[in-house]
Image (cartoon, rainbow, N blue to C red; front, side, top):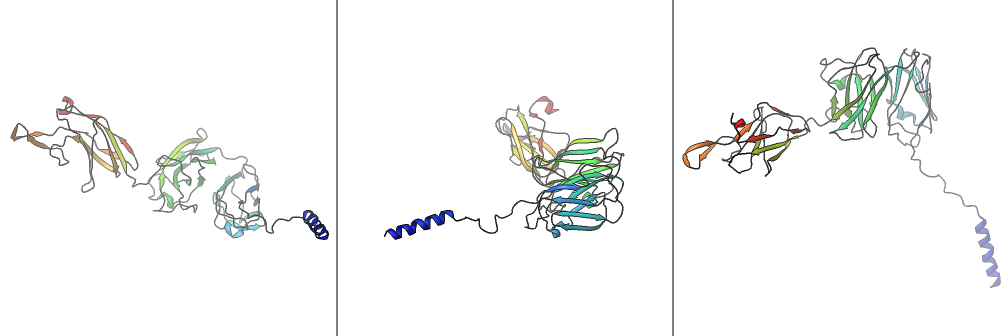
Amino acid sequence: MRQFIWLLLILAIIYSCAVMEPPTGGPEDKTPPEIVETVPAANSAGVKRTQNIQIVFSEKLDSESFRKRIIFYPEIPFKKIDVSDNRLEIEFEGLLPETTISFYLKKGYMDNHNVKVEKSSFFYFSTADSLEKGLISGHIFFKKEMMAGGTARLTSIEPDTFENIYDKPELRTAIADEAGDFSFRYLPTDSSGFRLWAFFDTNKDGDYSDSKEFYLLYPDTIYLTGREPAYRDFTMNIFDPNEPGEAKGTVKNNTPLKKFVTVRLKNVVYDEPSYEAYTDSAGVYNIKRVMPGNYLFSAFIDMNADSLPGTYPDPEDTTLTCDEPSVSLPDTISIAPAEIKEIPELELGNEKDEE
């Protein structure tokens, strides 16, 4: 028995002195590669026109994932793209142009563990003596709300010279951050015209998909000059062009007919839908789910329950008719996609309306 106890003590000492090793393989790599250095340095000037581009990352890279993800503005043809270990090197066919150059690396490239980068990268340098001074910045929203996935682009096409702006080559691309803010930096200020448009990259492929993604074109051409080198706080509120809107307001009933007032939006296009609603006891109404278009607005007490302003039998003499109290706006009402239109307050039964 004593020998057995001594054997147990010896085994316990041996076990306590053993070296414990972690499981082979280590934890799964879930950290995407990050850019740690660029040659030339970001925001540098006076770069040689024979300079190759080198980018050093924090991890080894998957070379195939860089295909079609490298873009230069202005466009510069490549001679060779080499991805080795954690380094990306780009060699050009000829001399770099003498200007400010924007390097755009689209999201989606991976390290050698197939961990994908979900954020695009930009850096700038100049082969001239200094960087350009131009700036265009703003915000991208979807129906006035922040939403990830906003992309802004610039083209140099003049207004009214093309039908689809998304078919034209971009001069620059900018990606909005989580707050919807975007910026184009180091733009030329030589009075060239820029067209600005934005879209939501819902399928996350880095490009606009016609008929699948919504976009918005800023209506005016933007000119940057030495005296006005910056345009800030552009708000690009993107929406579905078929998104219904609303029309709301108040109609006061000053007539002796104490009934709810009917409000009506009549579409100016034949056979297109019109919309009706009723006011509440305070005269307030809200016509919902109104398709974008132009409408004629009227308010009336619908004595005949036919949803149209007209006449009704005189309660004191059924051989006679009375006009249903009504009022209308002289001009058409335009409802834009997703718009909440505030209609001016109207009154039924006063002298002004009678006129």
